Each structure stands twice: as structure tokens, then as C-alpha cells.
Length: 272
Ligand SMILES: [Zn+2]
Image (spheres, protein in one colour):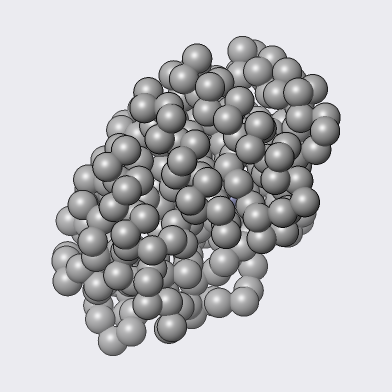
């Protein structure tokens, strides 16, 4: 058992438990020299499984390498991020489908829409996302959805495919939109931003999502939680996300951890 003092509250974390980081990119350049240490620290912090989330042709391959290097620890996902959207999207989709057929993939994503950086590729993004939704149905895989400044279009597209399911990763929308995604059956994923001091909306969302529809993540190396905000994020920091949500929901952190793990296992059909 690990005891963590977080914002004045003592949090219990079960060592060797099954805490899961449902979204990380530990194949990133940030970790080329210290991956083994980062993995050791994650294990030490009680993290027992990590989703290795690919988002491009290149990173899907890197995620695959991770899953091979650490079997039953990293779980492979593959997708094409909206920032990759271009007029070549059909070719990218063909190679993604090829990848899905060759490897054991636990989710399709991350994929989605990002109008913050990529408004000029909107047309390609929409086509790329819609085709990935269709692929997820064909291969019966959960979607890992990235949505930035595009929440309405994301919702409208998902609504058209009731057979699709998955998670709104690092959800940053309103409570009202969260209700709508929940109604479609989607899980809500929360990460580092929920710990930020002024993150009023993510904190509200953290308390309104039904317990069986919530998952947590780091999105490592991005979006490190308090008290590491601004630094390189790593999976061991998931404990701060857990602690924050336990505090907000006034729940025992162990009880919460077990529920969140069960949700992630169910969503991605991971082995126990
Ligand atoms: Zn990500």
C-alpha cells in the first residue's frame, strides 16, 4: 500500500494493484533514453497496465514495439489523429486497416477532430474520422476520440453511428455535452487538466459522470497533473488524477481505483 499526501488528503494506492493508465504515448521521443525507468516508476506507483495509443502510421508501429517489448503491460491501439489529415487520407486508412488485420489491437484511435490547429483540413478530418468510425464498427473495436474545438461536429458524427462505442479521451467539453455523449453510451476520460487549479468545468464533469462510465489517463508525455504541471508527464503521475477525482467525489481512493480499473478493462476488453 502506498500513502500519498495530496492537497492535504491522505490517499491510499494499492501497490501491485491493477491501476490502469487508459491513454499514454510512452513511445514518444521524451522517453527514448529512460523508458525502462519510466516503466519501473509506473509499476512502483501501482500502475499495472498502460494503453499504448498510436495516432499515425509511424506511432502505431512504435506503439506495437512497446506492446511487444512489455507484453501484458502495454496494450496496443492504432489510429490516425486529425492532425495527420491530408488529401492522402485514403492511403492512410488503407494502411491502418492493414495494421488492424495484422496485429492485436485493443482500440481504434486516437482519432477525431481538431479545429484548434487544423481548421484548414476540416474537410479531410471529417472524412478521416467518419471512415475510422466505420472501421471501428467493422472490427468491433472501441474508439479513442480526440476532440478539440470541435465538440458539436464530433457529437453529430458519432450520433449517426449508434453501433460505435468508445471513450471521449481527455474530455474538455461542457457538462451538457458530456451528458449527450454519455447518452450515446460513450465513456468519459479525464487526465491531468482535472487537477489544474482553475479547471472548473473538468472538475464538474468529474463529479457528474456515472461511476461506471469514467476512466482516467495521463496522455503522457503531455498535460502533466499538479504537482508536475508543465513537466514531462509519465504514467506514474496517474495517481494524482485518481487522488483529485477521489477528493472531488469524496470517495475512498481504493474503491474509486477498483471501479475505474474495471471500467477500463470492460471498455477495452483487457485480460484481468
Ligand atoms: Zn493522446
